[in-house]
Image (cartoon, protein in one colour):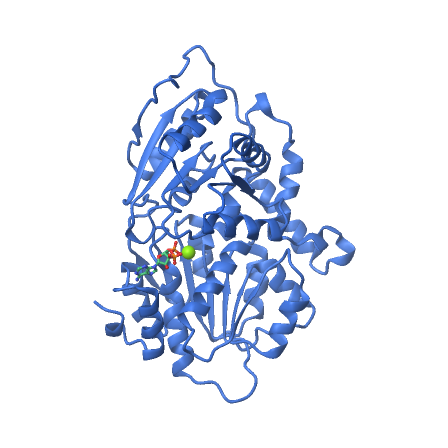
Length: 445
Ligand code: ADP
Ligand code: MG
């Protein structure tokens, strides 16, 4: 099957050709015709399978089919994403695929000035790609009207729920017209996702192109058992031995990400950290430097790295295993994208054996174990508990509370920390409550 078999217009086909795509990916092959038929969709596919084009192309096609009048554009499509980086990336994709069409799109997220975003919307846009917090801020200032939205997309919906955005999502839903097309995309399916889908979607088509929660087959996975205190040396050894040029490294905590990045720099391995406590400017710069090859190692927490697409990223390292098994699938999905080969290495110490078991159960396979010479495990070291904030008790210097509070800043709604400034104080407090009850995700920003 080709893209032109899918009935896309010449403007889209030309843009696809410019990207060098030769044929639609399986999720695109299935999702595009259904979306063109105006049906609601619940779609699940492994990360890196091209979900973004899977919804962006047919939306652009339908916007094109139903030409707007000559007046100022109004918001016809709304795409919600959990993180700023993902909003930026999806926004880029919309611009890329829509470059020969007349539609205007804009990205809306927190952590950067609101005025330019307000100005862009005032001028008139057809497509808005947004994180929920800033979107609601703009709406509460009367800067944005969702009353004529025809297409509503939730991208990475599972992560939105993990991040406690359910109340914001409900607020947004209440502002949308009843008659619209809804698309819900997610890499993993949970019961909460199904519940949300029941509420949001109208008689949806279910698309699932890979078995649920499977890890990408193009990623070669390996575990190196190693002592807790020797992980850093092993990482440096691996990077230097094979002269790795671009490595995305995951830690469980923001503090751990900072510390590791500083240590790598001391060993002449250029590195930056990316997590929810960094300013948006610093996050954007770190990611751009990493993509451009100016730094070798990007150390990230789960939330900061969610959904980001780095072209041909060869190596992902789990410096620490995630405490939520699904995150492992997301992490390693940063490599081996679009059918390319990639390698995912996990450094596992004695404290993390239960996490490893949980991951292997989820992906339904045993990961290859390789001991690196000189880094053999010392069997006399006993397991230490890992706190709910994700740190080993032994080296903790952050407390759980502060890292939980910091999480709220991930979507950068700093002004809302002051309830007087915050028209949505209720939402905010119920969001934190829902977070507290979700122990599984605390402290992972
Ligand atoms: P997902 O959202 O499923 O994780 P993305 O939409 O971010 O995946 O796409 C992953 C990568 O695959 C991107 O770099 C994108 O440019 C590329 N890609 C998308 N569709 C195709 C295609 N049909 N052929 C080749 N590459 C593609
Ligand atoms: Mg995606």
